[in-house]
Figure 1 (cartoon, rainbow, N blue to C red):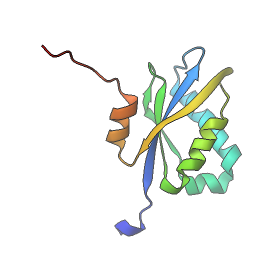
Figure 2 (figure 1 turned 135 degrees about the horizontal axis):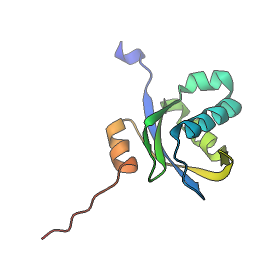
Figure 3 (figure 1 turned 90 degrees about the vertical axis):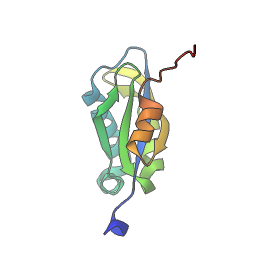
Figure 4 (figure 1 turned 45 degrees about the horizontal axis):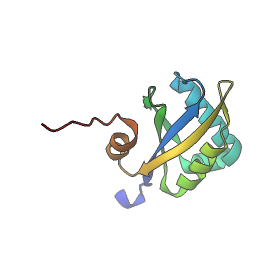
Length: 118
């Protein structure tokens, strides 16, 4: 039944680092390790954190994470606690959240093209 389905949110995050991090797998493993460390196994299973590796933008260093709507603040706290990825200092910042993947992807992940009117 639709009323029993758990609601989800999509959180866009941004990496700020000295050198660009090209591999989305290292980013996702760092987020997963920190979530397991901070939330524990029970908290991770309740949050339902899924890192969408195919939505990671290498140029802008932004990506998407799917999470339960009640655990969105816990995920933001987890991202704030990450200080190193692949041996370099980073800051992980949450950019925005939405309930629809197309909306959050178009607004925060993709490049915006501006056209000059003629």
